[in-house]
Image: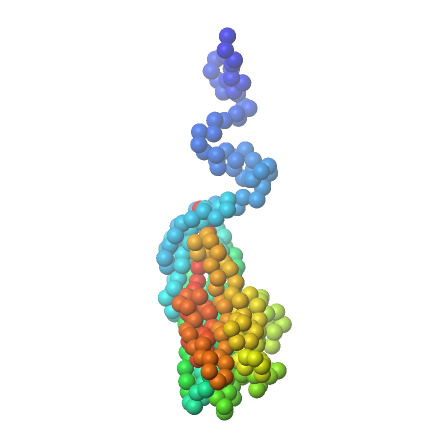
Length: 300
């Protein structure tokens, strides 16, 4: 005689043992039998959300153990993330616009690099409704222009501060690197206090979670200009920019945002270049900063 299932009696009635066929519904099995993943091998699983939302450019992807939907906003100025139904926690990435470096009218490649826009991440609960976002543009650069801070990126009661513009000496007048999410670099003749400050707890600029690092004051030899600070570290000399920081909210793979801008060298090296679009990178030389980016994601 064949073996009898322990899940039914001889009359075909199911017992209370709750032995269940998975039937492909592995997630439901673990949620109901392992206390929503709080015990056993699924102790680290995040709860899925029932959020139905719109706004920006959407994508779905798997990252590690989780399935995500992301909303990416790349248009400067006002944007809106709309929760149509459902509720739960969302994660957000705010990257502000990078700074821009000016110079005096006579030119001469005596410019520091600009600071990167501040980079900030966080988690917050949402429910049905509209959530306004503002995306920061890059600061303007160019000859006969002052250092310009990038635009702030805001959303969910948080603010990422625009990158500080880079300073110059062309040969006169002189301009210090500006404060910002990351500070702008400066020309070495203003050292040691020429570099702008980044945003970090207790900084003179603003008291907030760290968003970026200081710009360099420059150096008399071999490079004259100080590079802009980035989200991953302070700026150095010349091409030694403040490194950016990696985030995977957009597509589930690491993308580097918020790198500082490179400085020019006197007399011959002009590294003027604009920060890449939607990176928050600082402008190099007399370049314009890159616009920022905002990404919202949640588990599904």
